[in-house]
Length: 218
Image (cartoon, rainbow, N blue to C red; front, side):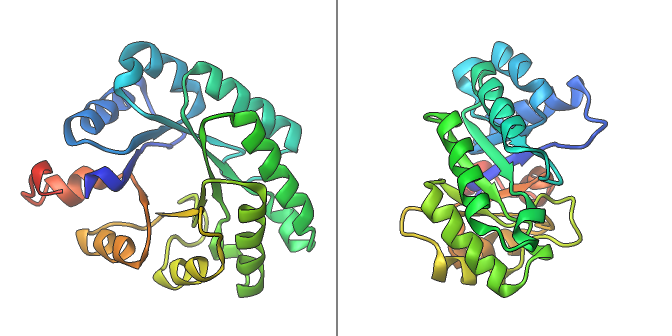
């Protein structure tokens, strides 16, 4: 199960010591990536190189920075060594019904990312069912790699109902990442069974290893 995990530390108070601990755990247990603040990307890449898959966040956590800022953030993150980008959509644009603008921004970030994987955080806790469906279309049309439920900083996290809705409405090449509130091994298993290819959590070691489960079992 650890191979599904984006091992995450995005707290505003994250220290270099904590980031190194996260990276060591990711390598030891075979996480899909580490998801870290962009200010640490270059330092982590310099220390761990190709041994570690680095993910960082763009427009995080509120999403309402202008597209040009998100594009520049993305370019710099990739230059510094990130191979995965988790971007937050502009929820203001969603609430204004400007779904084409959201799609175009996602495409701009995807273009800036080059070969890097782009995951689009839609912060589903703030969206209506119709808006979630519209975001599935926007993510698909923009050519993004993943749709992601949540930042973990909103009023709610991943729920299975949203995963099932995403599966119904995303394109065949779009994968799903659940994040926010994934706190038990049962949660992880349920999200993977429902169709998630990634799980974003800061609690993976406690969930999977702290309960006496070995990395080989996952």
